Length: 231
Length: 231
DNA sequence: CGCATGGTTGAGAGGTCTCAAGAAAGGTGG
DNA sequence: CCACCTTTCTTGAGACCTCTCAACCATGCG
Image (cartoon, rainbow over all chains, first blue to last red; front, side):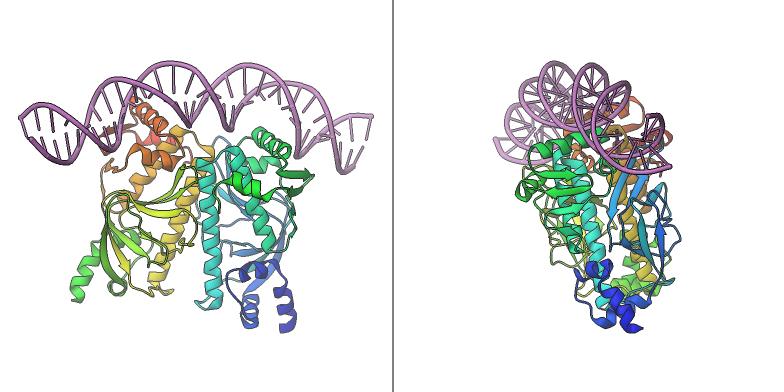
């Protein structure tokens, strides 16, 4: 049974993700696995109900953290991709109109009640993951505050490609982008129409190629140049 | 000597701040005090040199976390006010053009090397402080992504007043706002000129009053209404 | 085949920006 | 205590990026 658990853990997205932040021994993975519990599915648009719920890992599918203003304007604060942890950093401040929502069909694995990680390897790895999320949030602030639509889009596409590459969900410069342009708009602080025009422009500039929900980065150098931040 | 240390700790801004996130016993404060070290001063504009340095508490003065793009555009990601901790959440990702900078004359107290907090009261309080910072970062994303200049300004002023009130640095609706309009501009993702016009408008609307660096919130209800997020 | 959903395009409006210059405020040396 | 200089605030005018409104097109599905 231990072998089976380890087998499941080793090739799961969250283990691939966590390993980016430090080496994990088999015993660490077994420990982690023992502290994870039931698997659940969500349909696109469903609220993941952060408040009061235990944290979870995304096994597959995309989700987001979104805030809706009284008049309906919506800002997506962060994307959650397969392997990402949700709720470990207690952003579950119980507050306001902040909700976590499935963007695609979603499979998640909840932590068991009372989940903790020590300060050992597992703890450091979790701290690294939390730092990475904070770093992405900072990127988001910079995008929204000081970049043009074109720059924001370039930067976001590079971020998404990078994050998907970490868990092996890219084929070269190609990846699956399973969200409507409306979602990109609410992420980048733009209107749906302008997102569309921006993508058109990037196509004309040969920076990207889109077929359905398949996104191809045709010119990484130009995208990096355009995204400026230069990260 | 223990009494002296506790005396200093009890009325310091960071203790007032931390106590917001849970009760702390005298022994907790003594423990914290023992893990804090030297005090240092910075002049406005100086880099606090996050990378590789231990975390610190601001004893007095304001600082910020800022990212500068290649062409000089700057985005201030977060303000640090007296009592705030800087660097405890390892945003010190060693990365890019992200710097912490003094905005006013600053006095900070560094943690001693190897600083840690357990999972006891002190640890929970630190976790609460980290969650609050993340929550403010989310507010910042919403402001920048989906609010107008007027709304952004109203929301930021309310946030700053609230944070200063926590440490007793307000007198009713009056507080000291020690930053240039340029700093507000780089925080709110606006131009200096537009910040000025927005403040003028809020004055004409009798929402605020400004005398030098003294800011008065004249109409909290209207400010809250304008800031929308309704937090 | 018709409807629903999501993508695309046009045109005008509007919020914010840039450039530019003048006014106010604050510090410093004579 | 004043003259001067620097910094910061203020205001005007036109440009520009992005928005809103409104269609129209493409795709998929029952």
